[in-house]
Length: 172
Image (cartoon, rainbow, N blue to C red; front, side):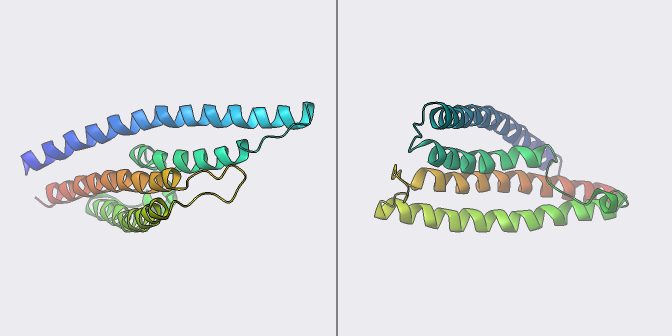
């Protein structure tokens, strides 16, 4: 059991590192999105020259930002939970809840990866493009949904193993 816990700790540290890197990427995406929106506002209201691309780009970047940040948010326990109920649990009951919640999240993540991947690869195969003025390919933003879901799933699996180890340890 000790080597399993050590292995999970190493994987968890790797996921932490990866999620921090994705946090930096998300910050960069946010900066690009901010510049695009600023360009749109300045162009539209000061020069009467709106762009065709800034809203569409912002939407695509928001998809990437949201899904790539999901794993980092989970690592930092930033997702919504009903704390006033959760804080009442102690010991084994809390360890069981700490396993059930990530299992539910993992179910959702698996569906997101599966269906998001199907949609993305179908879009790639048929060359699907947006219906907006820029007609950008849909595949890149769609595949980010599956990548983010997969990273979230890995974090949730690590949390499940961690909770299971706490449950076993508490049962001794």
